[in-house]
Image (cartoon, rainbow, N blue to C red; front, side, top):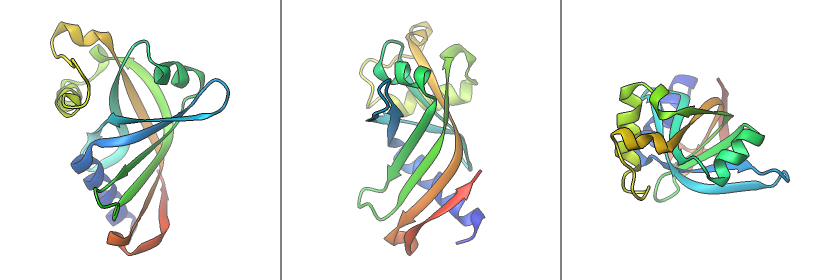
Length: 151
């Protein structure tokens, strides 16, 4: 697979699954993971990934302490696996373009209890993951070793 094909496969998997595993680092240096809904800023570019979180959560504290993040997405049968490494930044939902907010609120609704839209959405922080590296792996891609691309 060439670089363009890898990036297209990465985007397609994220857009189709939209629930991935977010790993952060806690204050003691230990990794911490959780399932999160996430969307790409642009459906064909894996450079920025967005997710929502309540203000007072462990992940927000951990990102403030260490901005390194790792995302993992996979197909239901694990035949396609994507890993994304990058740096996270925190934003208020009011700073998001409306198109990203609409995608986030729609995609996280089934997974985030009481996710709301109107003025009450200010109870959330936005986690913007600036992706620096993607790795693609899986039998569906005929890849037994990861195909890694630096962005």
